[in-house]
Length: 336
Image: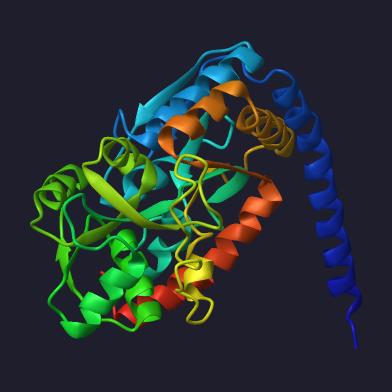
């Protein structure tokens, strides 16, 4: 039986909550109407000069022109994108600090780190998905491997003898998806930086790598590296003769196809950022994705437009977490 005083208490609390919401709503609307009245920061997870950082700066310029206010980029690279992500997670939720990051910071890191200082769903609100960052399977220009089949056959004939280089846990996991789909065993050679990895790859010290396409596009075009396949949903216009991994025969289950969709870039704001501000930024970000400046970046850097609303980006984070979780478990990677 419900006690009268309990019912009255719940009623009073409900009225109080409604009163607070009604009191705050005009303030939120006023804040959104006056936004922005000072410069906005986009925190980049990457170092200056990288593909994703260049993209961030193009977005900042576009937003600045549309908002009529300065938009600056602040680089906070390192620690698997944790430094930048944690910084924005703890920033004031007022629309003046944003995060442009890659998918693994939201979808892979929860399974790679036991003490992740931020929560992807609780600490952020997704603003917009921007692009897909295709991954290339590449070998030295002087390599005897001209196709994926050549590489796979050599690895099967010499288990563990071929060296696959990786510059991050994410790329290591993607390489693991490839080797599992192919039914081969190779030896991983970890590097701390992509630049040193590519130097050794061009010199023939390692046999192959999987790396962001934008980092090797110029090297492929100058015949210093050879692309065997792309880990992407479709062939890329920059190299139309290079097949996707699925086209190259890697159809062992759905893992490779799933992985081809999980390497994206997206814009996030701290949780609690007023919805009108998030929605406005989201609309402008998607307008940028289809702009001439973005199209030129896609052509030169090897990325693909992949526009998605904030809710769509939120769904992608959750769906991709399951793919990364599967990859991490299959590769036997233990969280740090």
